[in-house]
Length: 206
Length: 112
Image 1 (cartoon, chains in turn blue, green):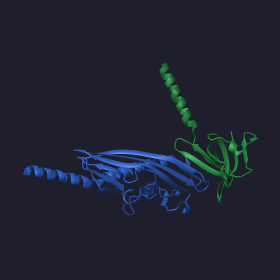
Image 2 (cartoon, each protein chain N blue to C red):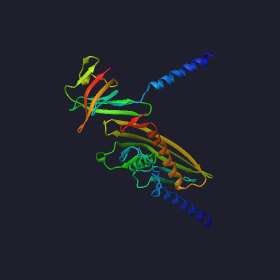
Image 3 (cartoon, rainbow over the protein chains, first blue to last red):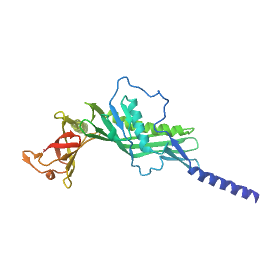
């Protein structure tokens, strides 16, 4: 009889623990935070561009994805600060700066004095992880519409950028999900720099 | 042998198809006037000012220009003058426009 009560107590404890873990949120840094001065610097100043906060058009804006435990418990991933639009704008600026562009995030496109002002929409952005017995499988996807408005002639260049990635790790840590999301965003943004060029201060498609 | 030739021809057609799709550009017609060729994606003649939006697509993306269309500007199909609402969505046109402080203003529209 006593054993039955102890068993029931343990099951209840596991259930409570399982439920409690559902409300936990794992915050991911997007873009990855760098030490001051560690960002690559180009010798020749590149194009001067501004980036405004992206519109978050995801069907589910509440979180980025889930970390599913071995026994079914779930934790949720989210962008630190819970502002995916600002995070993607910052990530794009970070990526373009790494390519030598003079990229600045601005709050208002009208105040921008840059050659090109980028805006856009987040259509998809997620990261999911599923813990197994000997590994944790991660997958991530990003789909972002980016629009560059040329100051010189008023034309707009619009592209839809996509990136996908997956990883499998033995010991899962939050950094694994964080790195994967940032890699997938960088892969998406790479199409922007590889498919465009600057001609007389205006962004053009290759 | 015949299958290889057919496959080669098919690949050649595919390659020719790819090379014919050049990146859309906006040409500078003068200091403040620009010219772009693209397909009409929208025309609005129900509100003032009337507007036209063109889009030129390439494999890597899309170039978009939207301009207001004032009364009396030259809109032609070939040598014939037409009204803005006679242009069709999907039709290829060449738009010459000016960038002003109030936005982009059409100077002329030529439909092929």
